[in-house]
Image (cartoon, rainbow over all chains, first blue to last red; front, top):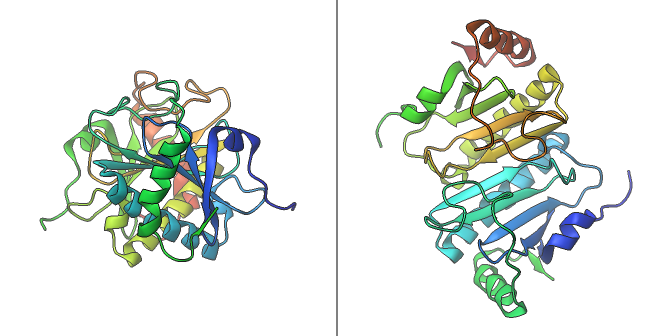
Length: 141
Length: 141
């Protein structure tokens, strides 16, 4: 097994925000929704069930902590959590804070509307809203 | 908190297959994909992070066991696991076994094509393929 590296498509579509103990936190470059991705930093993973039990539970813990924080930070009505990976096989877990009336509501966000890129200032705002709501073991990059 | 009951939309769209210790297993009535849903049998839940820690870990364990079994039973290329709930707020976790070239591939399945209902015989085939791959604590209905 080789060392972990982020899939080039995720690297192209996202901004790296932080590393939790297991996962890298990415911001999807689409200002229409607060849309984040957790990527376990283990090479060769495609499915959640390929992680060992400790890894599965760590991913769950990071997903739960992140999801609750993001819902609070961005005032969401519903959180969408999904591991799809049909286009990018590297295991990655979407977390999309949905608001009633957002551009895709109530449909899922994937493939719905062309992405609206963030300005650097908007990316910083996303980060500042999250940072105080996440634990000290999230290392911001 | 009232007793658990399945959301009427899930009851209308799905066939109940089994109860795991925490979750009810449903088969989505769309023969185009092996598409299943786990619904924790706790009233009033909307988000994974609203479960207590033991409940979160039980849901994860059932999702992992079920996902691996379904991928083996139906020869999947990629598993899609998702908690969306924009239309049906009751917490439910989709598990869709995806195959390269299936009707929606590589897009997500939601809202893609009208459902193609199963015949009773096909439902029984789905159940028979899964049953030997799941533990004794899945009670078949």
